[in-house]
Length: 373
Image (cartoon, rainbow, N blue to C red):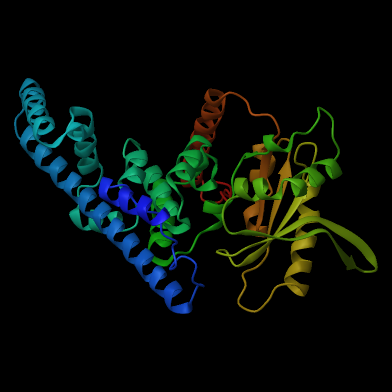
């Protein structure tokens, strides 16, 4: 009866369920290796297709730019682009609409050298490029490109870093343009990061969820509770080493709040947490910690330890006069509640202008220290 039913189903075209003998077999090293080879090949094919598409978009953008810019009439450019995109959409689909084609033109303007484009598209997807193409500042754009490439950010991570104003918060953004370019070129050519590209000011610690009043120990405990988010805010490369590290100097005990290690800088990072504003006495305390770490903890091949003093506020004149960079010390403000983004941007622009003024003063008076420029 059952056999007759199967034959009847087969005649009707109904699939007969047969036990999957292959899927029941155990995993073997051979199967695992072949599966990995197939997956790797698929990834390479996808990356190759993405690179070819990105190069196509650049060539299209450059060709249109050459045509439009070759004619001084603005109306001519609009008409040519409009007619062209209408035909492209008709033949190749909505992905060739005017908005998309304008991005291709913008891509070609932002990266005029084909040699650089070929290198770029091998490491970043077209979706990554769409995020950075609109940036007006080429140094800012190159900063995000190199970090994205080096640390293999996803598109989501790239957007989050930009929204969090990572570039504006790094010390590098307040340096002269030539210094910024040199540091980015160093990262691009050697993979080496300078401290100015690692440390930020301010740090956003709003994720700690602190009450209106808290102690330094509360702040420290909250950081350790949210250590993953804390390291995310600090940036890739940081690894937690110790909390309340006890050191002894002349039979006196001292305690370093937090110690991290930065893999790319190849050095220990001592962090001191302060509830109030930065004070001159904090420098001497941190110098003692750094010299002790250098003597007792620094390994062969590592750079000298660097200190970070996190304060609720700071006075720029104090920081400048103390020449903290010469002692490998950084001072940064932390924010447990974020102000409006517009206010932060205004503050960053003000800091950049102040740095430029100090640089100009240094040129006029070479004897004046400019460590904090």
